[in-house]
Length: 243
Figure 1 (cartoon, rainbow, N blue to C red):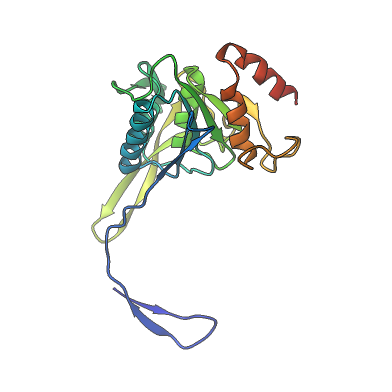
Figure 2 (figure 1 turned 30 degrees about the vertical axis):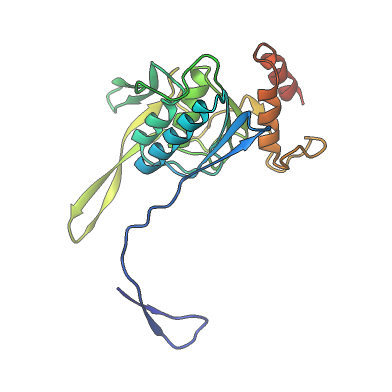
């Protein structure tokens, strides 16, 4: 493919490029809190991302890790199939989301079996903000409703619809058609309202006090939450809301 490029009003010039399939890494992991917490940042929702996420979860569990921070900040979403697979790493059974058709019919999409971290000993903090949308909200909403994860951060974007790509022809492109609503496991429709986090953390870290060990107020709040005994978590949440 030859591109003709003009920069700053200069003369046009041509640049040949070669088409290729680019597989970007959508999952980044690192260890926090002296290796007791696995941090997984998810940049998108593709089949490749779902596979990478499962591998990261299994590797962490093989090391004995029981605490996870899943970072969905500024993740605009992607395939609902990938959202189902990723949420199923923590949810053993039951609906991940409901799909509601135009006639009001509701059909559940249930968890896939064999998730890497579905044990009762696993605790999850999910980082969200205003850029967390669509498939990110499916995962966050499923973990929140199933009481498998605590949402930390800001109110999410609020996209509660499902689109399907339809081809017009081989030469004319296509279009995206909204085909259904999606609802959380508790049948909440979060369109244009978003998910409310359990622990509010302003984007600028205002009111967070002294900088934490990572310098990221979202991650530091998640680490504080996971460091507290499980039985004390409600007290931690109540303190955070009051603050």
